[in-house]
Every structure is written in structure tokens, then in C-alpha cells.
Length: 264
Image 1 (cartoon, rainbow, N blue to C red):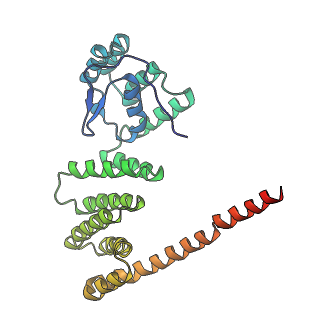
Image 2 (cartoon, rainbow, N blue to C red):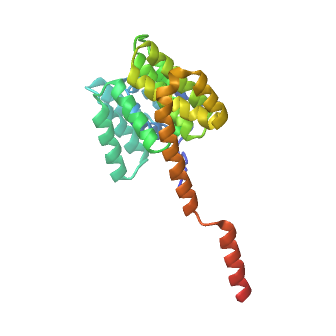
């Protein structure tokens, strides 16, 4: 069941913007929601005088702002800083609050890459594919090292996989092909073959069998990957047919109900 969070405190006239996500925060509850849902991506830069000033001026939470400012002037920790905010809002039951704070504590000293990996894994496990796509896009935009081919290709493939899970096979195919080209230039053959397989599975669904067969016949560089892709496609097709066969026929069920009703 979905949850709805209703802000009960003051709403800011001017929002606090959290970059690089570009998220505008107007209330204390929105700030808490950001902390809880973005735990794996929190950086030490989140603890800023600008945020404390926003809480003081825009939300009129002067007591909380003073506690946060005191935290900043000592030896601040993310878990201590976030705990003050979450406890003030009473945003979570105690058991959930302890769990969130433990997650923040566990990632505080991790590198940005480690945090990103955890974030992407959690989004995938929760099937939050739109969020996964957005995080990959942000991570790709932040990549500064042009030599990080494997990282770039990996983010493209994760983004493509999220599109495929949403049945958007056209953008998925384009991203898989982009990753394949990067890996081909970097001579990463095993990963290139994996990207090629994923690309072929997407275009096979998009084009249909006849066009797909013609493509393989005229692009022999895909031959090896196509054989593995075809095996995977056959297994998936067989599993889908078995699942479909196990679903009761709605027309037959309706007819049975109709007969039962007639006998009543």
C-alpha cells in the first residue's frame, strides 16, 4: 500500500535546493523524506550552513537550527546531523528511525562509487526503475574521467536494463548499443559480448523474427552473441508460455459462474 506524507509544519516561501539532483525542499517533512529515501547518496556536504540557515529563516525552526549549528561547529557526523532533523519531525517510528540511522552510519565513510552502487542495487531490488534511470543519468553526467570506460558502460547498461524492465525496448537497445561500442573500443570482449546479447534481445522484440534474422545474416560480427541471446530468448519464451498456460481462462471462469448463477 502506498503512503501519503502530509506536511504539518511551516512551508518555506523560497525552497532549499539539493544538488546535483535539483530537488527543491519546502518543508521539514520533505527534508526528512529526502534523508530517508536518499540515504545511500548522502554526502558530508549535505551538512551545510546554508541548510541550517534555511531551517532557521524559512521554516522558523530556530531551536533545531541552533542544535544543528552546534553540531557543525564540533566534529559533525552525518548520522548525528540527520538524527536531529528526523527526531524533531517525529517522521518515523523509533524502530524505523534506528534502522535509517544505522544505514546512514554504515555509508558515512564509503566512497561516492560505493554509495552509488548500493543506491542502484536498492532501486533495482525495489523495482523503482524510473529512479534507477535518473540516478544513472546523474552519475553519467558527473563522470569526469574520460578513461573510465567500464564505469560508463556499466551505468549505460544498468540504465538500459531499467528501460527494458519498463518495456521501453527502443531506448534500452540504443543504450546497450552505446555501451557495446565503448567496450569494443576498450577491447573488453567479455563485457562487450554481454552488451551485445542484451542489445540483440531488445531488437529481436522490437523488429520481429524476420527482420532480426536478416540483421544477423548481414552483421556477422554479432553471430557469437546472437547464439547465446537466442538460447536466452528461447528459455524466456518457454517460461512465459508456461506461466500463461497456468493462468485460468477468464472466459471459462465466467461461464462457470454463469452456470452457477442459473442453478441458484
